[in-house]
Image (cartoon, rainbow, N blue to C red; front, side, top):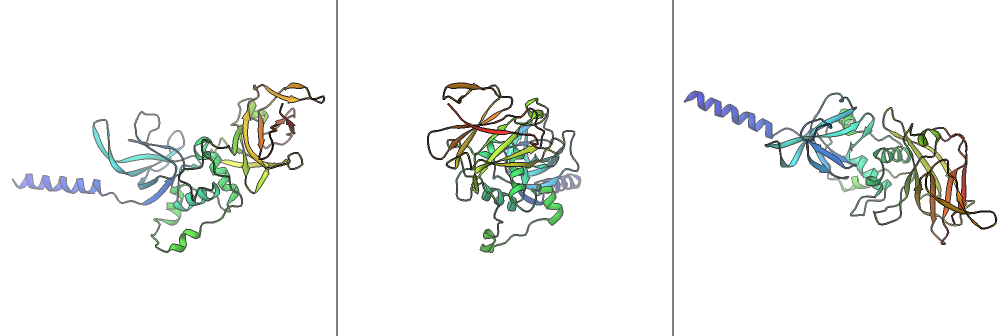
Length: 314
């Protein structure tokens, strides 16, 4: 009888310890992220999904990274999930891959909201779900004085964040140097992919992204990804003020295989032969549409050698 009581007591202690894992730090995901039963992205073990802006309560950081360069953290689930016949109170998410964060601090998330003009919106800016993850990180690094860091870095650097009830804290978010106009799925896109370099059109590197900022509405900024660390960075900015009579309303990708027609010198319809992807511009005013295309023979990954030509679409 004594042995049975000891066993029951020991089991109760173990159960209590398992259910009361201490939350080390809270983070926020800015991407759509799978929650998995184990830290292995190759298995069919998804138990839940996270959306941009979801808070994760981290109870453990797995040391190092796996064969794909993914770093994992264990999180406390808001509600138990069942997987493989078992009830799970904790699960795993990838908080970064190589140098690219997926989960960041609350401060970084507030900065993302500000640079995408989301502070007073009920939805997230469409660029968060429509563009590659590295684009948000690249824009963040460009418009703020510091780089975007993952939540593991923040925890090692600062430890658990202390709670503050000071209402002034909400006004201490740094203002970005540039911001992207808020758009939803049904409004005009402020970005597009573009295989505008020789290596990208040959599929030897990732396509670049073109972005419009509110502070320079007749300029297009280009960003590219470094495949070695998965992070993005700013490449070059091009000004089209001399060619456009109004600000850019939206941009769209036209692939190099697209049939694009322009007006020739005599005003006749003629097909534009594309060596690279082109970008279709819709201005704020007027019914005209314009095409930007690279007319150079060779362009490297930093856009050296690029020759962008703007023509009116037929």
